[in-house]
Length: 321
Picture 1: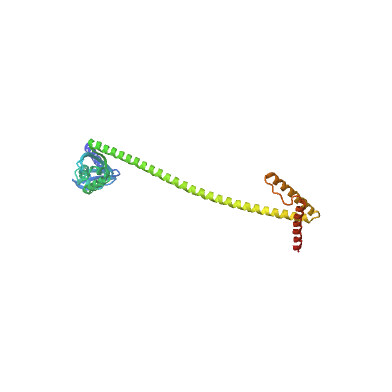
Picture 2: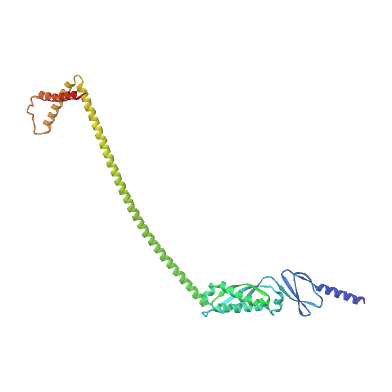
């Protein structure tokens, strides 16, 4: 009897321990009671009724990356492409994920492959490399629409590789090389064109600057000559004024000296000396000698000159107020 009670107690303890379940964070447990769906256990310590309840499915609610196997797709221009990608999804409804499909991961993988073949089949080879984002969005939209009944949310799809056949790769490489050579030739010709334009423009600018410089030099030279002429004219005028002033002052000095006592005798002597001096120069410098009618009478000539001087002096005295 004691042995039986011990076994019963151990069995009760074991069933009690099995009845408590700890659900981790970001996980969901699906519980069946008598073979039917009962509820979904949320994270924390949960209790199951022994014998009646059964833990049927466990699901992770985290974002799950799924590697989609590579496959051969045929483009619109009949070119084969080997394509593989990565799919990211998340379980949003544990009940549908448990009963909506027998294997939702396999279903998502197969649907991703068939959708990708369909999308690439509508494109040409060059477009598949250019429109990878459009391909990804189309696959995600198709998968998300179908995965609603599986309790799964498809977040995104990314193509990892697009590998064409080796012949296509070689032809693409040749095309790229030819395109780069063409761009290099175009760039070189554009460089020569710009160089010629710059040289011509520089020559034209140099000629314009030279002509402007010549014109400015001519203007400056003309202005300088004009200024020089004006300065010379002003200098000559100043010289004439100075000569006139000097002459007037000398005349005034002579006139003043004549009025002084003995001034007339000095004038007579000066006139006689100049007369004899000039007459002597005339005899030396010319073979032809012009003699005055009264050459012997020099005193009369001096006397005549003095009469003129005295007459001018008398006139000045008459006119003097």
